[in-house]
Image (cartoon, rainbow, N blue to C red; front, side):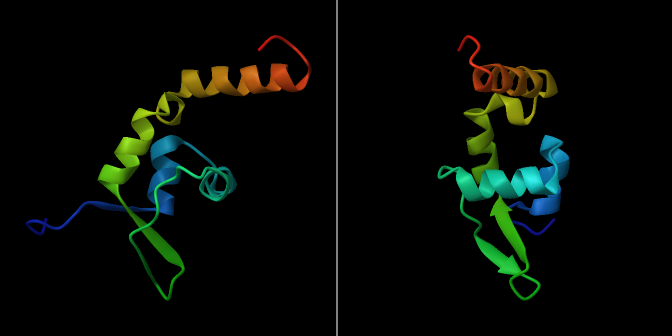
Length: 87
């Protein structure tokens, strides 16, 4: 590891880290205004990179990203709301 070089992650790393589909992650990036901004892009702009520290800050406010059971409850809750069920 290079001293003082920040830890970075790409979209593929986030898909693996959060157990998301690529499309699900793209939607999160596109529609959540609080999603961290990438710090740079490589590979002719095709690969965006985020600071791991920014991703960890984002995760702290969204426990369902790392917890599959919390993610399942959130999905079920959203589905029930869409059917007019209890909030």
